[in-house]
Length: 367
Image 1 (cartoon, rainbow, N blue to C red):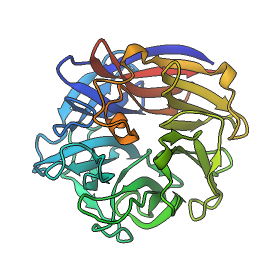
Image 2: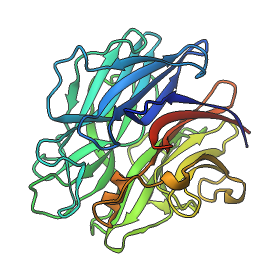
Image 3: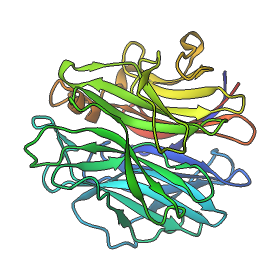
């Protein structure tokens, strides 16, 4: 593996840029989206899009997508992802969190999460403008017991079938235990409607939490999804796990461990049948790394490459509590993603902090 090129999507000393995603279009046009705000979890978080006409060398910021909308007040918008439906039609999914009850994403004392809504937008002008948001409701997850948010990118199984990954949390005010699930919903009409919530990883005891799922479609049509797995009561991260579906997402294997000791990760299927996974390492030399596997389980760690070096800015400030939820809010880098380009290079995108500026970045790698 060799890094070919890299660049900055967005850098602003007065405004952080987080959780970017890049959609390559035709003729070296790249469309990016991200959420921006004072911090990664601040209540002022909004979604903006950017476009490059020369494969990432220069970017034009289209600004906030909410500027012409009648969006809700007291909601923070995070984690946008764009899917191309056709040449002139784009679908964006994101989460908005209700900040009126608790200001931070998590309440560390009760293990509660801000109420989240899955929202959808549509664009027919390469992301310059977007429709008013529509809310995706999941009937299988009653709001008095669950809140939920987006996870990895939407996967297109065929022309009409799409899979939308989500994860659940415990809503503010619920007296029961946290029932965290990693699941998916399906669209059979190119993203117009979503239904059939299906659990793909869950521990009924509540000990193992399956977070930040991201998937890819393998050359044989199987779906491969990876997770950050955390043992809540022992404050311990296991190695990243994976599941497989051989029937277009209807049924899933049991979670199996890999040898990657990371957190958020993003597998990318390559044309030769192997998988490259971009992941965040939060121990030792912290940063974002890329590793390869030929069997979906055993990654060539010895030959992995570092894509981003977190240095002394892996954690920003001091976490409120010494638990995983508080530390997650103070992270100075993370949420990587990637896609395979037509020239067989892979395009990677992520955010990190340099000299106190949280910025979004990209890198291309060849094999």
